[in-house]
Image 1 (cartoon, rainbow, N blue to C red):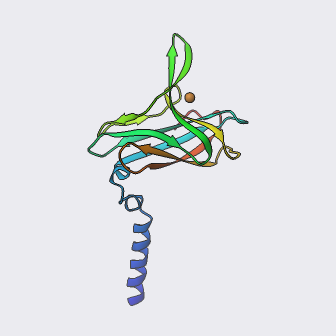
Image 2: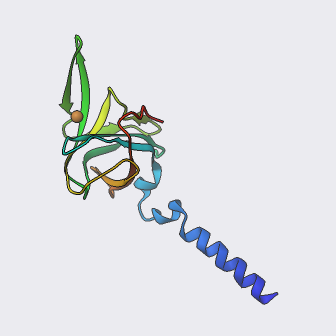
Image 3: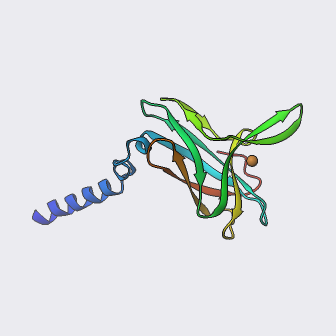
Length: 155
Ligand SMILES: [Cu+2]
């Protein structure tokens, strides 16, 4: 009986420790911002790659993403694809991306994307890349991306 109880307690503790909610409990802002469907479209060689994901601000206040960075890339920028009469170009999004309370935002092919430049190690489809989103007010948010084949169209 005693052994059973302690086993259950150990299992409960293990579950709690691995919970992402508790892991970010020290950081209310990160806890309230959810990211999902994070993927990177693979490109060969040293060509920059684009990263896509969805952000959901479940908190009760506006957050501002000021920049993004990754140990696997020399530079990460937030870009917006612009379609000017069929002429596609990209624009740096500047100093801050604001997300109001309760708002969701998707980075998608043809729209906003993370421009991942100067890769620091060889990457292949199936690899995982961690990107940090820096906030104007609050601790940074870490997002795990999966590298997908060139032909991948999105989740
Ligand atoms: Cu770009």
